[in-house]
Image (tube, rainbow, N blue to C red; front, top):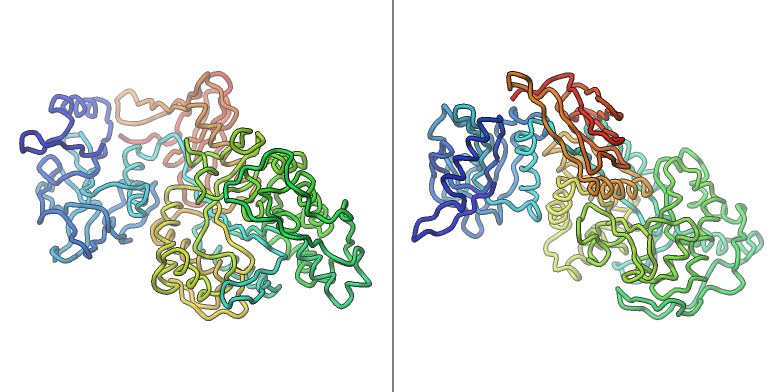
Length: 608
């Protein structure tokens, strides 16, 4: 509960009446229910006193960190990891009643506060328990609050709750096989080399070894096959080996507005008429050393793979004819190169070129007609996100997109720009286009506060990168936390986010390929629509939770319902239950409902 207070004739008091508080407190004691209070003011109700008024003045930052995490072990968060309170009004406290009150978090030393002070306490007033924060609350924008909230969620539920904690970090690298014109130095073209790919394999192995047990991180490469054919046909042997002798070239169509809605059936074909079917053979494709690298299965399977269309044609005003060729030609090229046989290949997904075609019904129909059922969007464009729930995908409609039924998975952009291969380049572009200030270290710090908040909020949206960002061969040495070396922009960005999450938590980090992350979002929407519920059953003496009962609307749901328990296992009264244990995380029980509620009996009852 937030401390919603009003001015009553000069006296600030809670919007909740004394009688209401009494009723709440009696309910707590009767049923051993814990309460969480946020944004509170220290006082005798919390076994504390105010130290010296609120904090902080402009330009003053006071850190907050946990001092004791023993009362919420299933949160798997770390004591002593300091975070900023900038923008969060708070009132440092001191404990006045140590018999009822325990400090669990503290504020650091700051101007006006020469000693550490209390940030949060747990009270036990003769069996009535409450967790109290003396700080404002804004997890929607604050990384600090997004982190702190995991403590009281696990404390309040005693680690038994409906839901799960899974951290998914996906880095999708667009434009693979293509050459990119750089922002800086202006006018230069750049394409990564096989040595860059191999450096990322080494790095992936290294970062996985440092992550918490149960982690599995890898990059997802988004291919444009025409880039391979361009390089092959332009090679010394291309003219005599390749048939056709040329890759796909066309006159670029006029640019459109970002959210341009194309009237169905309009537009002009830009693909050359003579290219009706894919006909280059492997002998031609192998002339390009970069693409040939993927012919070795051990190389191929170090990454995940997905189509990014064949040529990267802008699709906002494209015809069905051209959109279909963009899909079919790339599918044929992926099959020719064996990429469609990769361990982590997404056959039904697509990363649209520059996220175009999202309001072009002809394009969307061409995608769906050719097996593409889900694509990624762009979270900087509100019309491509689900406005009802950011944890759900957006499903296209005729009214908004021109064609119905396409699944649009949310995807975050970053300050690592598509046309940059070095830290200097992306910093220059950040300053010029996004009001950034400082150097690359400042860019990463700014990115960290936003993107680690996303991870702490358990947002599984993948992140957008581009092939130039994988340049590792000619970059300067950089130090990111514990690691020093030559790092690509993808490496240094990921190291920043992963190391920060590891500083704060012990949570495993996993990547899901595009098809799987799309299903993850669809399952979340399906689960929420089932309106699942969880009820505790206490022991006869009222001192333990011995079982929980899972139900939903109609007691059916087409996806399993996750239930987290602190430890041990559970047996189901009906339906089915599947245990899911990753690393040191608390066990998740996936419950399938088949017409009746399911009771899970806990092998290890939870003390109240």
